[in-house]
Length: 281
Image (cartoon, rainbow, N blue to C red; front, side, top):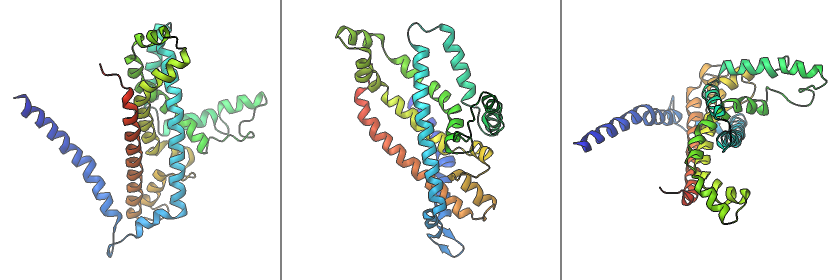
């Protein structure tokens, strides 16, 4: 009796996946190669133009940078919060803030950063009064480094939430065994801790990469489309700001899917190598 029920839920999941994932992807792929006169590669070939190449470069650079910052900072925060001797209240405070900040994005987040570290922001003005001019020093909120700073606001809390279970799964006995064998703290983390955490860290990085790569509202609200990203270029061709070409938008979307598939494939290869360190209970 249990088997038919299990297959019923599996079938429902596959059906939902087909309707909301496979079908839209297939429609985009077809739309990208169908023009007014039938089958054509014209729209796919436009992805090789300078404008769209730069959009992919900016999106990849921003996604890789913000995901890396998020993984490193989030893991360090989670480690400090969960290490022995840390105050008990610290976890509840950090996790509560992380749950809120991880979902704080879009236009409100862009406005908050403009009001804080924009050209006339509160922090910018306060620093000017003490002789520190951020923008004269080369910083700009309306740039790739500025976007990385903004994205980190929700990437770091998201990583904290993701990595907490991995830290909690690590057994204190491992550390004690390493110390009994004469290992230092650095040797323990290099030879035991980080290899065990590697699959979780890699999975978190992929999730943060995808979150940044697909983000649109925050970047557009902050830069008004002045920084070319794939998501803003899709919006431009669909809204008619440059030219109304839904086929180009479909080709760009397919390009994004291809990038994510390649990243996931690479992560799976690395995960297989890291899985030999996974401790089986």
